[in-house]
Amino acid sequence: MSNVAQIQVELIDEFQLFDNWLDRYQYIIDLGRQLPEFPEEYRTDENKLHGCQSQVWLKAKSEHGLLYFDAASDSAIVSGLIALVMRVYSGQSAADILSTPPEFIRAIGLSEHLSPTRNNGLAAMINSIREQAQICLTA
Image (cartoon, rainbow, N blue to C red; front, side, top):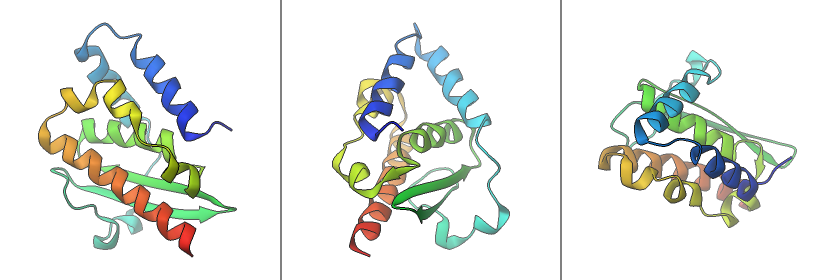
C-alpha cells in the first residue's frame, strides 16, 4: 500500500503527461465519472460540506486503523477533484493524513487554475478529511 506522500508523487507525475490545462481539466472530469456510486442515505446535512460552491457530501469511516471516505458532488469538475482527494487520502492512517501536507494541489497547478470558489471547496474537503483524521487519533 502506498502512503499519502507516494500517492501525491504518482499524481504529480500523471499530470505532467498533459501539455495543457484543457487536457488536465478533461482528465479530472473523467476521474470524477469513475467515482463509485454514493449512497442516497449519505446525502444528509450532517455529511454536507459548507464552503463549496457546488453541493458536496463527504462520509468518513474508520476500519482497522485506516480512514475511508466516500464523497459526491453535483458538479463534474468537483467530482473529479473529489476523485483526486479520495485517491490521496482514502485508505490511509490518520497519522499519515495529518503529517503529510497536500502538496499535489500546488504541484499539479490546481491552486492557480481553479476558480477561487473551487479552491475554497477543495480546501473545505481537505480540512474535513484532516478533521476526521484528528478525531480518529483522539478517539
